Length: 243
Figure 1: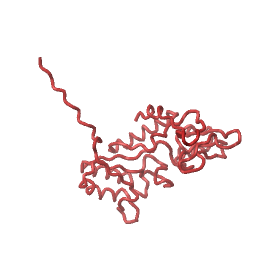
Figure 2: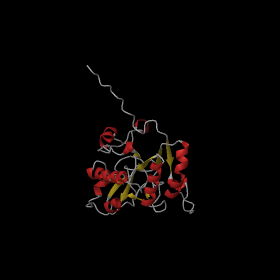
Figure 3: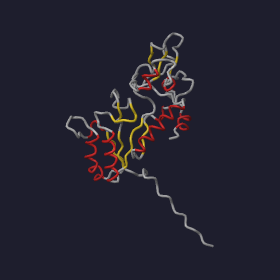
Figure 4: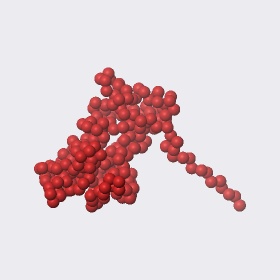
């Protein structure tokens, strides 16, 4: 009897990899305007490779009003013009791969900027096709917020929209409305966003605020702080993270 040897599978590339986090706006200025940008990053990649880095992780570089360092995204499929262009991004990825560096980028699925076209449309009417992309609730019986949730940045986690008579949920700034991941259309949008960047050569994603993407469907009041779990539905979050 001949026994074929069982070959061990090589570990995934990220196992044991050394990463280097880059906040593009402050890393390297490539055009002399005093602000870091993608061209500046491209010129420093050889140095990162020399350091022994395996993977470069880019914090958000998307179009953004920059109320929260770029984590308030107004367009997930373009580069903020202050930081460069899609061509500059492609050059970063190409140069990184030439140097055997992987590139992963931040993706921000919990919320968008209030400047994002989805939210601009959603807040305009209860009948907007984008209304259910976000989490809206009627006021409580006293006219106040729907529950007692508070923002990570302080104050209520709800802001009232006078035009439509409902509150929107924001775990961070009011200008960062939370997306409604109970709506399958939101997952479809992010599937397309991930495909867009994968097609441009990125090697992976770091998912921002992954633990808070799904909320308890009843949005119940939170118990006293020592027992609070901030309303997250952890089991459904794991099952929803299909990508």
